[in-house]
Length: 331
Ligand code: UT7
Image (cartoon, rainbow, N blue to C red; front, side, top):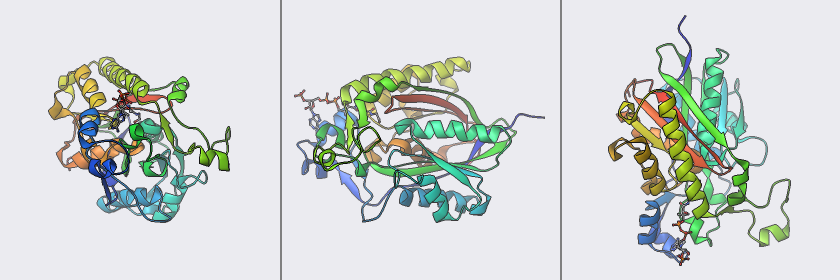
């Protein structure tokens, strides 16, 4: 019997309509379009506006797109994993809320917190449920409403983040397509450089923590940058080597969209020309767990069955990793 692999069989995505451009940011903090573009590659980001709207409101249309494309009854979904650091609430899990809103009444699910590597970690986890033979339809969502935790007085951090959601459907395949290999890493000592100071069990919310602006993402950008360049490039090169392939065998690199300079460093290390690298950072900025599925969503029409693609990410935690995927279908 041929081995069961977890193939990506559909992609969905959602970005809010409202745009926050570099020129808009010039009016909020002391910055300028030229600095942001040359240092990060970003021109604009999307922002989810409106009272009572959270991450699930972006994840739901992304998942519904998959249901529509596959003509799928939500009751057929076995499991939904939601990668996010901006859940609708601390609990219950946003995965539960998404399942409720789409009518996936037979599914179980949970949230996975690995910041910008969340989608990769969730993809590998979801794939193992399929590979085991236990589940047939697993949805993996990457979503973040970063605007909810960004301090728009911190010019070094607020310029990179935006809101968005992406999702994929994993199904069993016996034709060799799907998730081939993953190298995933964490290093908790990196927590000092990218974290939220208050709101967890160590420092619950008080008037003081709010006044001290401790419920926003805190980032020491330069340090994170150095770790990200090394982490993402090293792990991507290691993945190629472990699978006995080179950049020539790769059709696409799907890198986390945090900074164009980090993306370029990873592509160079893998020996990949720019034409093989998915880059949409200029339009969405860094949407944390949503960057990778939003790339797949934007490039879906260009992907062909059998294409080798490498997804790579680095984020808070620190967390990082790379996954080799053989694409499952012609769009
Ligand atoms: O996705 C999760 C993981 N996160 C990342 O991978 C992000 C990694 N880090 C980065 O992408 C970059 O560090 C940032 C884009 C966040 C910041 O860029 P940088 O080149 O590292 O800037 P910096 O913080 O080292 O600041 C350099 C200079 C400073 O001025 P001086 O001290 O040299 O005079 C800053 O005050 O640029 C100044 N600066 C700005 N100037 C205009 C910082 N932010 C801005 C700004 N506009 N928005």
